[in-house]
Image 1 (spheres, one colour):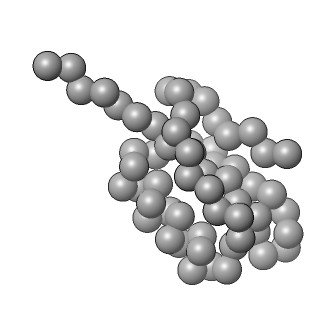
Image 2: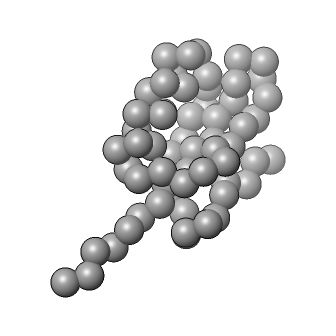
Length: 60
């Protein structure tokens, strides 16, 4: 049986109002932990989304 690996990336706005994106892909559990760290650090607009292997988020 094949195991499907799903990658997740994050985007957020930091406390200086600068839009940021993760430089690595995460598994779901790690992405959710990072999301919590960002929220605890008072970052806003934190979004976790699926990504293809090697794909990084587009930050506008």
